[in-house]
Image (cartoon, rainbow over all chains, first blue to last red; front, side, top):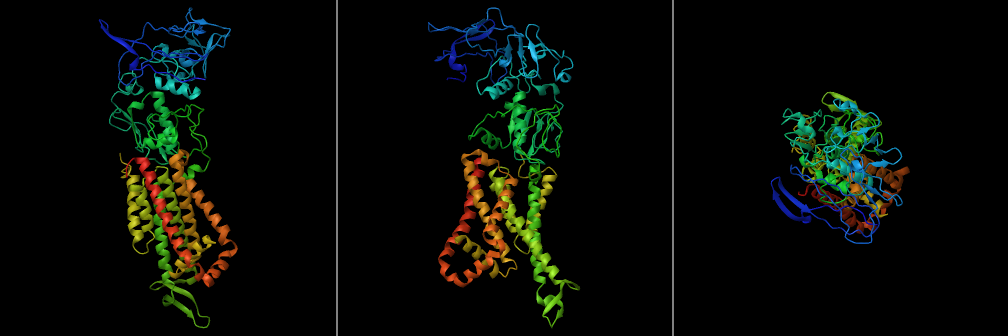
Length: 467
Length: 128
């Protein structure tokens, strides 16, 4: 079985011509089809630059004799098949037609989308748009904003103005190539067709969204995601004033990827440690395009302690597989880990000090008969029960040492997963973690390091993760 | 047996430092060593299988928990270590040949851990 898609590239150019109406090219592409199957052609111009492209005189030619064309579909702008469309009903027929390959139902004459059915004869859906409240100026039955050249609506939910979305919607479902009609304009920010253009300059230069945590936001014409600045719960991403904190950078990344797919804003995105993320999910180093495994809705509420990230519009959970309680440990931020080291170091040192004070020279109330002591001097003039002091000292030392060991393993895990770097934050954490266990002044040095780091993180001046 | 000797040597180290809890520290040190060994393996696997890259603090803690349970069951349960360590005390001369391997294991574990972390780091950032 042969599958996939062939892109028409520069190599397909047969000649250039310059006329009164501007330049035009004739493109020709020959492909060999070795088996029965179907051929879908998509006429869109997908490029970064903002140029208007028009197609005309589109035709298929079958070069080899003795073969039969089983189906040919041409559509009016709103999707009604033209009369000369040809279907050979005796063979298995392709029913994924117009609107990014929506399935056509012969009985009802409607296209069947996820949310609604669409009557291409009327150019209207059969029921009200589930997102009608977002398009108050349009009929709730409208298709593609009554502008089928610029928009389509493969889900029956929101209309979508960009090819990236079409690709993700279809490719995710079928694993095959892109289908369906698309826009003829570049739709990046600033093109006049991008979602953000309606905001004018009011957000320029500033952080956009309700995150308040920095790290990700809309500013100065670019969307940014910073995988290093993982926010309160281990992940952070915001461009639409919706989610800003996620339980992991992976969740943040999925929301981010979905957002860019929806809005076609990949080209305007500044990545933090993006390759780490892309590698994890594309299973290959240097991958540059990430597609989420499933469609997710990035609109939602800010979530501080939810078990699952259910979005406001009801439905999709951002990522399955996170058990309740998982977030408990993911919320242990860098700072908490650092504080653990300091507490460990201080406990260790204090414990040793207390233990040292419990030696016989500091004892009071010595019982000569039994050779035991009841109390020991803690500091001059204050005596405490010796066994209590020993117990406290040992408890502190146990706590301190366990925290130290756990801290080393945790920091290692963070470095492997790319949340910290060895030459930099993670390595220094390891060293400072070790320093904290040097009795005497070690924990003071470590305390100054971690304390200062915590202060910087809380005041938004994270030194390591500054971009 | 070699693992018991590793525990014994660490125990001896802390005992010579006149530490009040040498047994606890030998338990914790061996647990941490096994944990970072496994973490080293995970890091190496993560170079080929990206799924291992997504480990987090929960996994690290679970790993340490499992290692400590393993350690407890194998040597520290029902004070097995008392017999083992006293045996070593009596016959330690027979095991002098293992001292070198214990030292190599401890230093090697830490160095290997740091090296794979450095490689992981390099793969994430593209530079040191």
